Length: 345
Ligand SMILES: [Zn+2]
Ligand SMILES: [Zn+2]
Image 1 (cartoon, protein in one colour):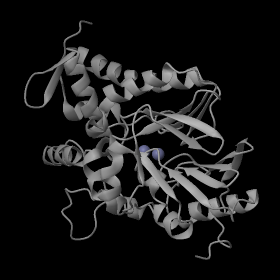
Image 2 (cartoon, rainbow, N blue to C red; image 1 turned 135 degrees about the vertical axis):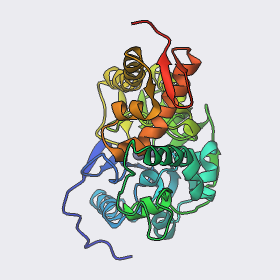
Image 3 (cartoon, protein in one colour; image 1 turned 60 degrees about the horizontal axis):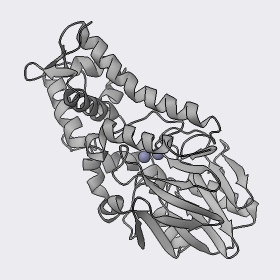
């Protein structure tokens, strides 16, 4: 693959965290840009935490970063993936063919998405989004979204082709076989770091963060960082996401290295702000319902500003909050599609 002369023209960065750890950062933290790629080096090779999108810009950025560092000829030992989403694992096809890493390591709960990427359709809860969109179109409560690539010609316009959408964003996913599966509490050595696995579902079923208790460092993945907290019922939901944040909150951390955005030194503020985003959605729903019953689609309109966001990830997020607030006996369903608050004004 000749990618050394390809220019992306919009400048990502290579940030030095330590002598043996560099962050390869895209120009923007937002989809469909890639997640950050962390490159570790020790005496006999390099290892990666997340590999980013498989598009030419990200792949070129990674190659150039390795060249600048003088690490491009070193053998690749381990590839560890925070979770199997395309912006984190999309470049696996290129990594396998170009670097042939000795080990590919993921959390055991994300194994199914390496074997059958089409199952991401369910962990993203697309069937619920589709069902709600059909309701909305039929009730004329919101137009169907119409993003490029979302509705391939000939397909049922009421269906969302998730993998087709990833392809259209030049951030596709491929099948691959991990060599090692991790779970909560396992230890893993990467470069000169020693991490404990913290299982942090909510955003993805097998999402994991890695904690070095000697260096007080957390590789957070998507749980904290420059992205809006999003979750779906099948990935652990709002309740699962909040529990994951509480696990992180209990750790002594001096520095968070997120998968989106720059490194975070104001650790407590970042944790608090993510938590507030989630709890703020609870509050928005309750405040709206205190003023009178609302339908599902009215709540969706209040929480998310555009039809695109309302469809995805809005529907999955609202579904999580309705479930959470019903379990907490703060709201109640009063007919097939409306809710009321059980809290007084
Ligand atoms: Zn993700
Ligand atoms: Zn991500």
